[in-house]
Amino acid sequence: AIQMTQSPSSLSASVGDRVTITCRASQGIRNELGWYQQKPGKAPKLLIYAASILESGVPSRFSGSGSGTDFTLTISSLQPEDFATYYCLQDYNYPSTFGQGTKVEIK
Amino acid sequence: EVQVVESGGGLVQPGGSLRLSCAASGFTFSRYWMTWVRQAPGKGLEWVAKIKEDGSDKYHVDSVKGRFTISRDNAKNSLYLQMNSLRAEDTAVYYCATDLGYCSGGACYARYDYWGQGSLVTVSS
Image (tube, rainbow over all chains, first blue to last red; front, side, top):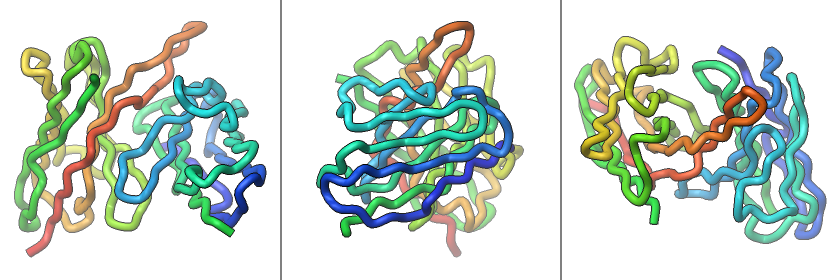
């Protein structure tokens, strides 16, 4: 199975900060990657699919980039509602695999 | 309004069986792939299984192969996960999710757009 390695595993940031989360695949996955946000006790929410396409209704401060093995999720100006855990998910082949998650906390 | 609602979770002894159900409404269920994802207490997300629109293709993560089976009944707008030979490490919240998909340039991409609230499965003696 393809391994997805996210970094960092956690970070502390302030409202208004620019935040970058990276995800590295153990082999090339073209652009078959999504990003999900999860808040405590809630189901995940899709933010980005096909590495860079913003899901409808998701604020434009979220963006995704990358192809092959290296991917990035960027939050351009962190808002209070963005404090959550973020996961990447590869769907290049089965089984699909999630990264281990990045918890974004308030500084 | 799109809704997916899981049911069937609970406490089961190691080696036991359980069947999770996911009832879908508000969209044409038979047109979309469906997926199960789980999350052990305090841990990250784990993709478990996925099934094609008509049920003809199914995929399972290695850790559940031979023990879990995903299925669907399009006439009932329902997704299922039959879980046998349960182990303590299967303890988790199980989510069903709709894959609306996106296809472009000859490639198709997963879009897990709609999720249920989750169903807790606890495997313990």
